Length: 199
Ligand code: SF4
Image (cartoon, rainbow, N blue to C red; front, side):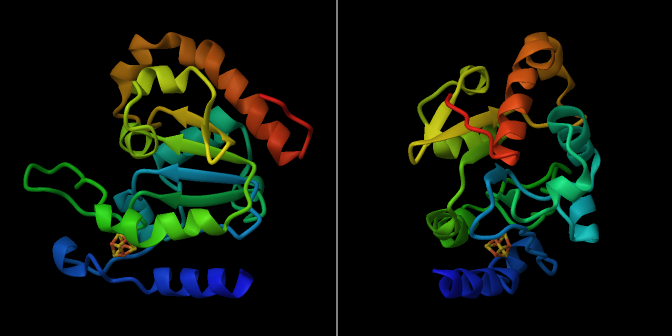
């Protein structure tokens, strides 16, 4: 499995399937290994990450790492801890209205299914409504956030998008910051410390 996984990641890092559609050179972003404890799946890298080539180096990432998880960069970027992937591995550019394009479905179909088959993780974290829709197509996004869910019989936590633009959602759901994120943080930190956890 290790050789197959290495080959998969090498091919993924060279992927240019969306080059013509994007109109620029794609920069696939991926970090983790076969034994990462937590598989984190977000929507797509931002324009900032397209430049830094390091996931979650933007404002959303700072909120996620330092305010929500309360982990430092040594922990977050340790591939034994987090496998950081997304519905699209590359920043998809802007549409004609100036909004970030949707993550191209071809990325999920080509890469993510195969990645997830390889990794021996303990926990999934699914970030944002678009990602949640892929894994839980028939469930209400807000309900998913406030309960424990399962993918492949493993615990899956669903988070709202940490983007600074997502102000209204946080105003409408104050219990996320006052209660739910405390529960989520405890689960994440227990998994990172490999404490026994039963949820
Ligand atoms: S978004 Fe995915 S499929 Fe498209 S170029 Fe990047 S890695 Fe390839």
